[in-house]
Amino acid sequence: MKLSVQKMQIFLAVSLTFLNCIQVRAEPQNPNEQLNQSLIFAAPPPPKDIGEPGKRTEAGSRGCSQDMNKPLTSSQKRLTALVPVYSNPELVFGITIAEYPSFLFYVPYSSDFAYGEFVLEDEAENQTIYKTSLTGTPGIVNLRLLSKAAPLEIGKQYRWYFNIYCQKDNQIIANVEGYVKREQLNPALKTQLEKATPRQQVNLYAANGIWYETLSAASELRRTNLQDTSWTALLKAVGLNDFATEPRVECCNLESE
Image (cartoon, rainbow, N blue to C red; front, side):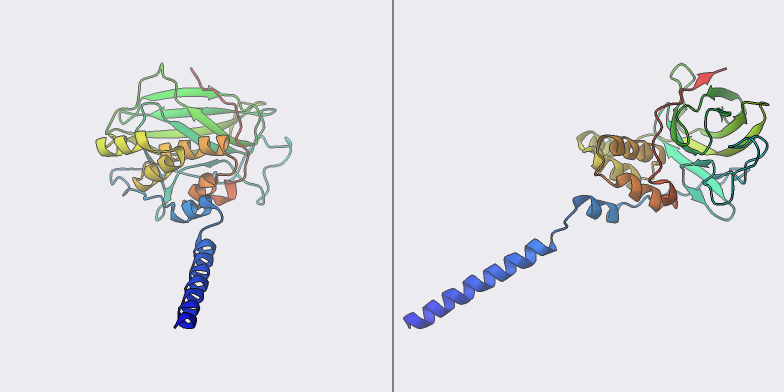
């Protein structure tokens, strides 16, 4: 009987050890990878009253060019708005909850020969025009609307344009355009966001289809935590993974005309 008890104790000890080993191996080695696999941007249905669909990526540069002699080649990345796109036809649209949201773009041109112009147009076709330098580009620029301008109104839809001009002749060489709509933040979601970590905030914004705050939160997380890959996961979720490794350019303050 003593021998049988000893055998049972040995069997249980070995079994527990085996199970512990399985549990350890099953744990993800990188918590960020587990987060990225679950990061899904839940794009809201696009508005039905949009006229022209927009343009997320420039069709091709014209006039002034990188070396002043020839346009960008097909292998080079083009001016691109970091925003979701709906197909058939291409509709460039995103939601914000901010009075003064930030717009992010990949700019392949340098300040040596080009400058930018951001235009915001309301539903009555009134336009606010901003100019910006492109110091530090090529790279991803962050254009934040000025607080001295009129804030975006809840429930209103706006059209935006980002134009690149040649310094030499002030002609447009590339442009992208799309739509943004400001929505009211749900009180329950607001409470969740206030208690969430920066990484959790990215997921919460994404799960609720709030594009501009998702992008801004992921961009800030990328700046403060190089190990976090929420930025890469988000761009991949909307077909922009080619721009995930492009540098963030600390420049481009808007100046209203």
